[in-house]
Length: 162
Image (cartoon, rainbow, N blue to C red):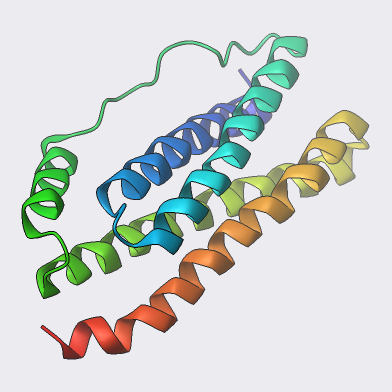
């Protein structure tokens, strides 16, 4: 598998992971209505991106529809239980900020992969790959902007109240 295949696989896994993480955060913080609803909505983008990457990969002999390389760890389960137990207490805010930070970093990683693929597509005149990156990357950038905005809005209140 060449570098494009490796990057397609990394991005596909990243999009699938981001979808799972967004849905987990939405569920964990369902009392924060904006987080719950927006995270659920933007998770759909990652699901669509992964499906489109799998289709492109199949056209190139890269199998991307198989099982994920890893499963959620003990830390994820611990966060979910802690958020449930704490409800709307100040400690929940710290968990929310940590979750938003992790989502942001995952979206940044995906954005970098989209950028790498777009640059490669331009250099190799690969229209299908360029169209995919051009369609999907802006949504990943919006995921990043949303998490960044939520961190900016919530940090002062949540960090002072602890």
